[in-house]
Amino acid sequence: MLVTVVGVFLAVELPQAVTLILLLAQYTFSLQIFAPHTSAAVSLVCNLVILLSYPTNFFIYCAMSRAFRTTFAELFCCASRRRRSLDNRITMTAVPTAPIGKRNVKNADEPAMTEQFSDNAADSNLILTVVDGCREEACLELIEEQNETIETCF
Image (cartoon, rainbow, N blue to C red; front, side, top):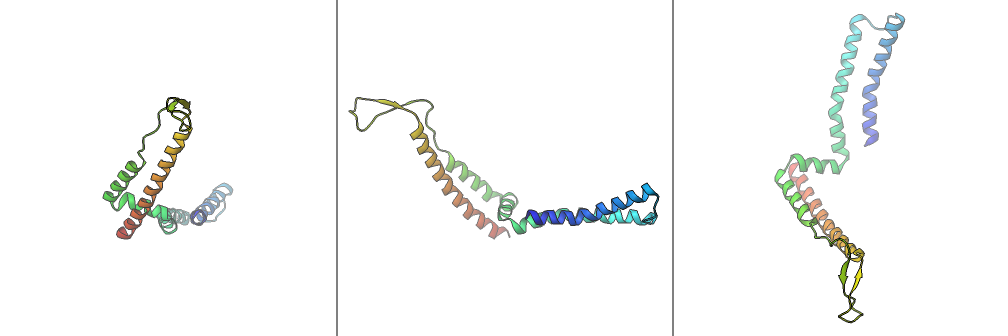
């Protein structure tokens, strides 16, 4: 996609650059390269081509990037589905976190009265695992919703 966008940019900008170099040479060295009215017309045509090339980037992105199409469909096609998917993302990733500092943890191997303190490393790993699992589920649901959105919008 990047090669295509850069290729279109160069194909459009090179005629303008060549025209400007020729005009610069014409006025610097007093050469007669263009007729007086021709240089203005060539500059206008080059500028028009440049202006017409800007929307082509949108179509290149649409043709080559599924992520761009899904994001575009989410933003502009179906606002109600977008709100619902955002609500699902917020609900699915809201997981309570462990308190900061040391926690009182009972060891199963020791008698019930004995308590020992441990870092929150094990608890935070568990929370991260739960959050990652929720995010994976939310992502799968979101991908399915996006596929449905694309089918209905396009």
